[in-house]
Length: 149
Image (cartoon, rainbow, N blue to C red):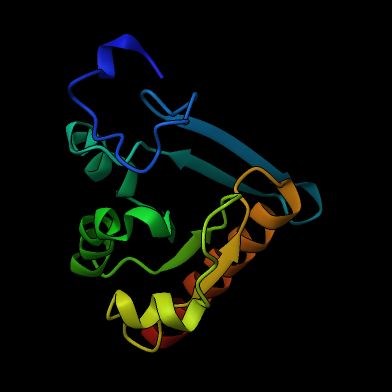
């Protein structure tokens, strides 16, 4: 967290948070056998960064909305964004230490998602857990492509 975000970002529910994405994160996973690359962009959820979303979503095949259940209302704009663009996405419920763990069907219902939007649990700090989220995004994108074809 930086001093620049003081008075700008809403930190309610995350007072102990010490790190955050301040512009965007980028990663690439290569699958040499298939000559395939998966490019990953992570954006902050604050409104002031939304200008990045249209550029990053252009050409995207899928997305993950990472949800903090202590601030569930904050993810509605992201869900609406991907729905309005018909971009396949999954909701990844980040399981923080010391917070109540909602069942994925409870989050699905609270967000009023259609039955074709998967909700998965994850720990964003654990690579194996994040891998499962990425697999869910790829599967969701593949399902959407088969519906279009």
